Amino acid sequence: MNEKPHWLTPKEQHAWRSFVGVHQKLLSRIERELQTTANLSSADYAVLVALTGTPDGRLRFQALLRAVEWSQSRASHHIARMAKRGLVTREDCPDDGRGVYVVVTPAGRQAIEAAAPHHVATVRSVVIDPLTTEELDTLAHLCQRMLHQMEQRSP
Image (cartoon, rainbow, N blue to C red; front, side):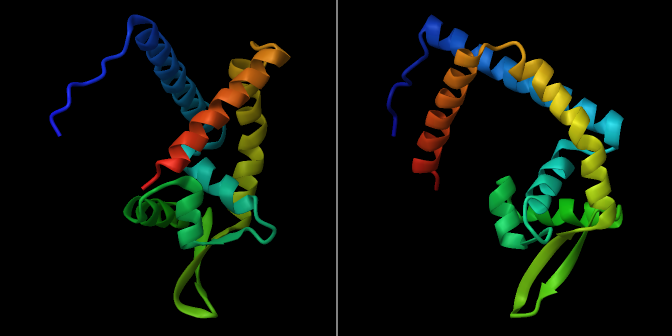
């Protein structure tokens, strides 16, 4: 496969670099905010959001992998670190001897409840408030199109 690359035009490159810049700065700001206000990483927060988004605060390990889009190795190591900090526990699945649940603990719930107001304030100040209602609709539409495209091409 020695096809010549289809290089970006200056306009496309400008759009791409702008997108990457926003992405990097936003993630960095959110990471700092979570760390300073709640002693959580953005990875911790993603796991806690996935778990607390379920009625009983638990997900099968494989479902959690899909929710946060991590490899099994990364998730195993990260969940182990979160368990050491008392934010989650691992429980065997009673109906499947090989399956494992990841369960949010009371400390994990307390951590996300403390972090969420600061997180929302950051998202609001950096992403939501600077945009008009129409721009927000456009942003949502564009992101949904890109997500749909990625999901269609997902391995």
